[in-house]
Image 1 (cartoon, helix red, strand yellow):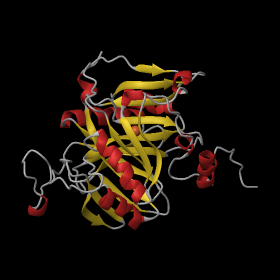
Image 2 (cartoon, rainbow, N blue to C red):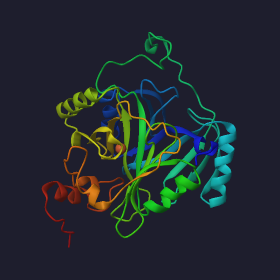
Image 3 (spheres, rainbow, N blue to C red):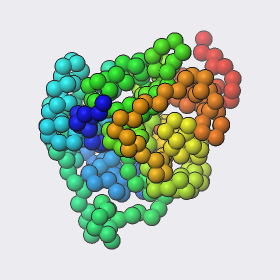
Image 4 (cartoon, rainbow, N blue to C red):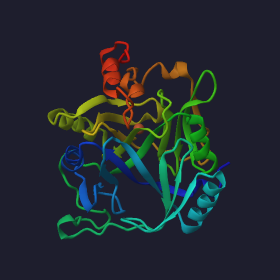
Length: 336
Ligand SMILES: [Fe+2]
């Protein structure tokens, strides 16, 4: 049964993304998604979606590779933060407290069992719009940009993991998130696992990394307002040379309407809209899918694209050729 600790994590905060082509990635987020740069420190740009109440959404960092850096999670209260920190410390996965930094107060840094870097915090900096960015209505964070995809807010993050079951159990038993759906493997364990913090049907997801590397990234998702915005986004990406991997279509699991693209740095970015669907039941029984059920494809029957299972960041050796082979439907032949 659900108890108060299940609400200790309030929501996904901000995510650091690495890119080997900083200027192109920055243009993707600011020009096409209509995100706003609020700070530039060293090799990192801090970018925000227009209706985030906090300062920033993405820390985009120039790097020799792609992939995900640290993910921030906001606790529901100081007491909730202390409870989760104590639980994380007991696992041995804690790194310790970090000083306040851009956008957030003191945070406790840790890693999940797969090695993804994370931190949890409570004190935060609320975004204060300047005159040029002030909304007409005082109950929204900033002016609606009215250009490009108009990404409103971050929705969820999906990590790859060498051991989905270990990471899923960490989120269930240590972070006290609640399961919404999962894919059970025929030979035991889970191939993918969806977790929620409040009434949105998922916030953090793990899926199986076929390479068995640790700490890789599958995608993060932004929420535009409507399904129609996602159709329009596909046209915008088509016109701007952004690779459309999959969609627009409707997921079977959790039923979100989706579009997946690869931003210029190679990281997979999703645009997701759940319609009015929420999970209101505090004790929602987890929905489990078998491998055979998953093989039927997405909601209306279209099969999942092969690159969904091959492409992740940071790239493994020969990642681009592995993806090309998947797209062309031929076996991948490793270089001699
Ligand atoms: Fe997703």
